[in-house]
Length: 235
Image (cartoon, rainbow, N blue to C red; front, top):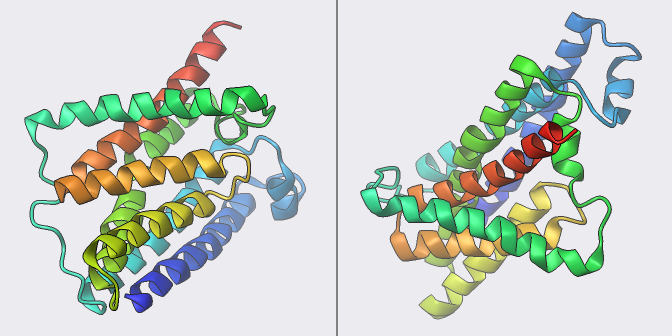
């Protein structure tokens, strides 16, 4: 169990490093003014920078997932990616979670609450906007659900020794949710992401499939994207 969790952490770090390498290639190919250091300080980076960063991170996630199944002997859930007609309900769950998180944050009046979305999309238009939209709403949830719920949550919930099954599941829910929130690197959004991670882990535990948590996660992200599009249309 511990080896799998550590592998997930190593995969995350390796993905960050690979993403940085890919971005440095992008800087060289585009002759980005100021080089990689200027790109790192840019409040609104070009779309290709975000895309290359995603590719690096997802490669690290994929390596951790492969390790968990091959070396960690974590068996994939039967039919984990097989959709059911009733799964449309989980799209509603994701949308509802976005509104719930927004309502919970509203009394605090955080000015930087929308920083992650604005950071990705503010300087992005046309095909670049479409590419990042697809990556954040459809592709990112695949890798994140597979790693944080399909691997880390299950490794803890199914592999914790010396505690009851219920306690192991609770530990898996909490730890996987905290790691999920921390992996996004956004302090203000951390609590909301942890809450989302708790809900997604519960969905996996109850359904024993990744499709429900994926759909909830994707629709959560898509709701934030729709808000960005609506904001642009209003200007």
